[in-house]
Length: 198
View 1 (cartoon, rainbow, N blue to C red):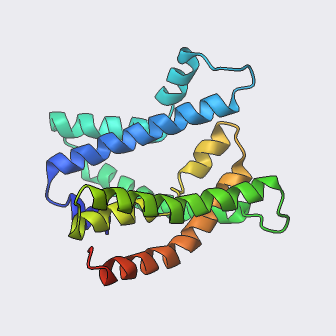
View 2 (cartoon, one colour; view 1 turned 45 degrees about the vertical axis):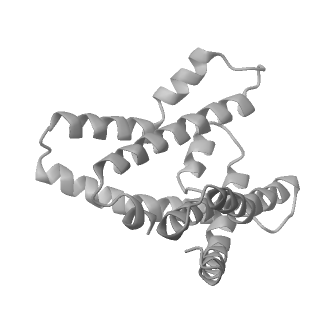
């Protein structure tokens, strides 16, 4: 929805979106490397290796290079890539769902609830207020709200798992935010409409 509202037909904004995506993934790798380090502060070389091995960053960089230099990709390879891309999100959500564990509210589960509340309630509220202070209204404000109220990316689960983090907490956060954002996004849009901000 945000893609249609914001950057469809605008290559410059699409490029900014790709840069943002790379930046967020780099920041995620740095954060995970620092928090999961068992030897204190990780070295810059270690963080650089983790960034260089990140498949999301690599795929965007390769796609940008192919797009920039106009390489032609065979149709059979494009079809295969299209099928794989359609399977990725459902498979990631299946793996995440299989790892969900709400039976015991241990400290990690409480952390998941706190993080989810911050993601789908507090962050959108703060960003919408800040956007209003800058005079943003209409579709622009709606995009800000929807982008900040979205659930945590399913790709964060395999990233945390591959880096040796707490995969159960990551799965719980994805599950809670996915379910919660359905309600919070709808209520948020209604509130913005009622206030004539959107």
